[in-house]
Image (cartoon, rainbow, N blue to C red):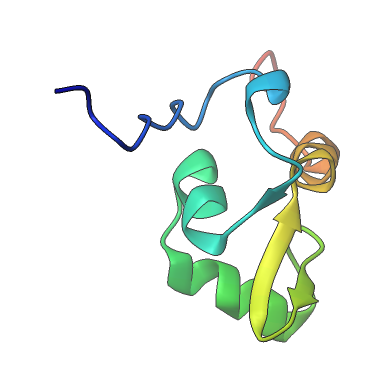
Length: 78
């Protein structure tokens, strides 16, 4: 008997395989941080943009990727 629930793609999967909205747990796994960190970032006004859908928090993958790209990186060539 086949598994009735399909397996989810890994967090690092291409954007085409992800839905347009993500739960905090999915974003936390993608970024490699605890979910609690996402809630702290939301409280402080830092981190990726978050939206309330009813009583649930959701992230747009495009905004998560844009936020991640905007983060400064250390120049290790010095």
